[in-house]
Structures are given as C-alpha cells and as structure tokens.
Image (cartoon, rainbow, N blue to C red; front, top):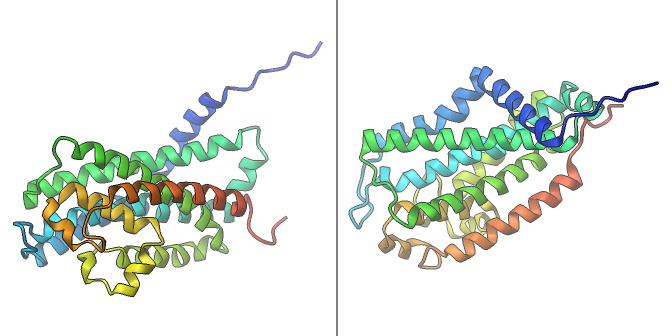
Length: 269
C-alpha cells in the first residue's frame, strides 16, 4: 500500500519562498548597497549641494524628498527585480524552480515580499536621514494615507513592469546594462532628480506615459504645500489621475508579465 505525502499549502510555500528571497537579497552586499544606500547618497549629496529655495518656503531637500523616495521605489522594484530575475533565468535557477513541485505562484509572492520589505526599509531610512540632516517636514494627517496608496500603487506598477522588463536581458551579464539605463531615463524625465517644470515639455509628455512620473507627482503632493501644485503641468496634483494611471499600469504590467515572462533563456532547452 502506497502512502502519498501531502504537499505543503501555497501559503506555507509562499512564506518559505519569501524568507529565501529576503535572505538572498541581504546576503548580496552589492545589491544592498546600491538599492538601499544609493538613494540615501543621492539625498545627502544633492541635498547639500543644491540647498536653495524653490518658493513658498520650500528648499531643495524638501522638494527632493518626493523624488528620492520615488527613485528608491523604482530601485527596489523595477530595477533590482528585473536584474535579479534575469540573473536567475540565466543561471538556470528559474528552470529548476519551474521543474520542482513548488507552485509557480510562490516564486512571485516571494519576489513581491522582497520588494515590499526593501521598499519599506528604503523609505524608512530616507525619512530618518531627511529629518535628522535636513529637517524635512514629514506628512501629517490625511497625507499619510495618500503616501500609503501612492507608494502601494507605484510599487505594484513598477514591480510588474520590472518582471516584464527582465525578459529584455539576454543573460545575467547584460541584465544591469539593459535595465539600469531604462530606470535612469524614466527617473530623469519624470522629475525625480530636478523640479518637473524644468524638464522640457516634450519629455514631460513622454514621461506622462509611464508610471514613474505619476508616482513622483503623487509623492510631491505629500511632501509639498498645495501652493507648489501650480508648477505641475495641469496646475494641480491630479491625485485622481495619479490613481487611475498607476492602477492602469498595474493591469498593463500584469498583461506584459503574462505575455513575456520566461522560465529560461532564449534558445535554451
């Protein structure tokens, strides 16, 4: 008589996979330094050099806080995720996981858990440094709720986009060279590193197609006074449009993931 062994539940496997993803991330010093500390270095460097007034009593570090948090979210989701998935595809990890009894859903749950943990850690460090070094004014009241949903939708959209973008890299060696320029270009044209009204108009139009611009704009609504909303292209924060565009990108990103995700490199068997 053969006794069958019941497989662990999806929830249990997902928890285990999430733990594996977090351990692997924090064991890779390069990833930790670049993903967690690079936004902090940006804040300290640009905040110290470009300490000027933008009007309404807002200095550059206060203005830049929204942008550098957006950069941290993009780094933790789109950039870091795409590079790591491409590496795991290239070294055969994804192929091995696909052939194992592990539900494929657990793999993606683990990646999402990693993004959430790294995003929260990045935001926490940036807020702490911003307050202690530059005296950044933190959100208050309902702004915290706006901060939460903008971060959640933005991270979700960038995570799905990162999974899809991972398929553009031919192998692990080309992953960083393929993904990093995409992330940096999106950040530059989205007003992450400079006031958005200083970005050329045609680039503003290009940026409006992608989620990073709307993520940064939603975060500006949290950290800046309403008087500075006049400097936005529409003359307001457009939080309703922010929610619609980021939500739409979640749907588009999910479609792209389903259409493009591969468990092994092109040409491999």
